[in-house]
Every structure is written in structure tokens, then in C-alpha cells.
Length: 108
Image: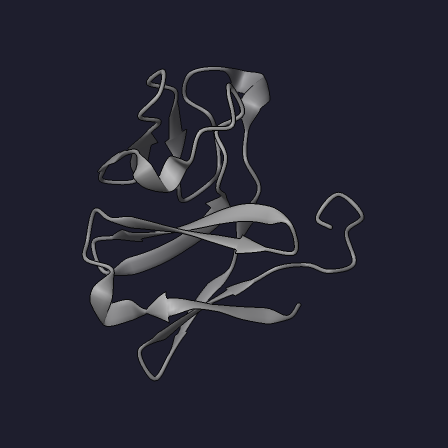
């Protein structure tokens, strides 16, 4: 999978998220206790940016209507059917990279 740079790890504090638009889609990366997780960046309810939500441990709460997701698994804690895809995140020399699978037709 190709890696896309999201930003500097040192600027994303624990409990914070960052949104990145790649290939016409939004993704989010979260720092949970010093470990970084990537997932789809739009809430399945009304497509609000999850990176602007409230992060409490591994749970991100959408700022718009309080839908909740586990950033480690992508599971939606509000509606079983609304899981998000997760993506590997790697830190290289303080740069955050997210791996997006270009072979999946649903991703482009």
C-alpha cells in the first residue's frame, strides 16, 4: 500500500486527531496515548469530520451528533452497521504516514 504523509508526530498530542484529504476522500489519524491510528475521516451518520471530535482514550465522539467510534478497530459504538475502515499508520523520522490501499475500488 502506498504511504501518504499526514504531518509531524510531535505536533499531534495524545487525545488529538488530524484530518487529511487524499484522493478525494477524508481520513483521520489519532494519537491515543502515544500510539497512532488511522481510519476513515467522516462519520457514517452525517459525514462530519471525526478529527474535530472529542477523543477519550480509544473512543472518538463525533462533534455533530455524538456518534462514537473505536479508533483502534473502526467499530461504531452507536450503530453496529456503521463501522469505519482502519488503515495502518507508521512513524518515520517523526513523520506520520498512513497506508491507503489503492487497489480497493471503494477507496478511490
